[in-house]
Image (cartoon, rainbow, N blue to C red; front, side):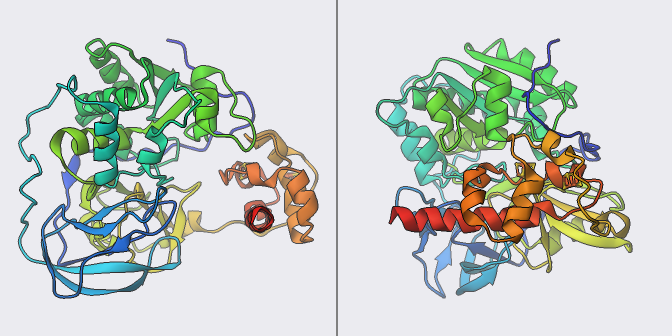
Length: 445
Ligand code: SF4
Ligand code: SF4
């Protein structure tokens, strides 16, 4: 079997996929859910319910507000208890709808039968794109970019390859791995729907070598789905970054400041493909997702089907509570996830995992002087000079930061991972990148 990968940089953290063999279990519906109206990149959705309203599972509660935005649906049935600002995993407060759960009454239009719906022949591209929009589908790998926008290929551009991102290169996370094993046909039909929406005859499912069962299963299934191929990939972080996946699968480089469609690629995550199947073929909006809850000292780590808005505390309870040696709780994976300070944070559309790190792994070593070893430069998959960017950011030299392409940084953390001096490189680079992006935006205005 040939395993592909990208050329520049990358690192090899221990993959620690503790829950790869644990089947997805539905998590009990909590007593209340907190559903933020900004769970995606772009404009927050506009809340259309009021305190005291009764809602059903799958009912629209906040409407997309512009082209780059996404609808939000209730994940439970019950009464709207409150509407107000709450903190989410990003640390920022956002408007949210808080719903008191009463029963589990689904919107009647959702097809809840277990039958697989295969026939996509009568669907037109615009039918698929409209359904994806209505269902509030966003990238579920963590990027949360509204999927409708990705499927709307701009005039003058052509999709030549649909790529399903089934890499899941972040250590510990296994949600997509389980989805591939347990929802393989749904993933394949979702992929066919994407192909039809963007008018493309070729699709590739990129899977890393540490998931041989998923590679085998989907390769076998692909015999029934013309045009869809599984592409096994070498184990290398950040193989799941959109640009690096495109490079590995197609050999094409997305130039600085350009989009995947500029090189003919449309990339969607594996869980997103299944959500597209459910939206189009079952009329089911995106109100639940698979979340990995894991950690070295966690008693019963697992993969759970969780209603959006469920507090992280309920997930922690489901795996046996917080271990005594807990040092840090992360929403997402250890490389790109965000540390959370309270367990009240709700699960959102982009929450792929909750990771409990023990004290021994939770803290960086003390930062020492840069020894100019160049390891961060070798590790950077974007071909940047992280030590230099960090130094420029520290001096607030934004002009030089821009000249040195700080905005290309994908915040993957490879530089920090490889630095023998424990330099907080990414903290500085992220600050520099945000500052330069602000300057660029105001210049455009
Ligand atoms: S975080 Fe940015 S600077 Fe550091 S390795 Fe990744 S892309 Fe390069
Ligand atoms: S890896 Fe660390 S010590 Fe080496 S050059 Fe980069 S910042 Fe300096």
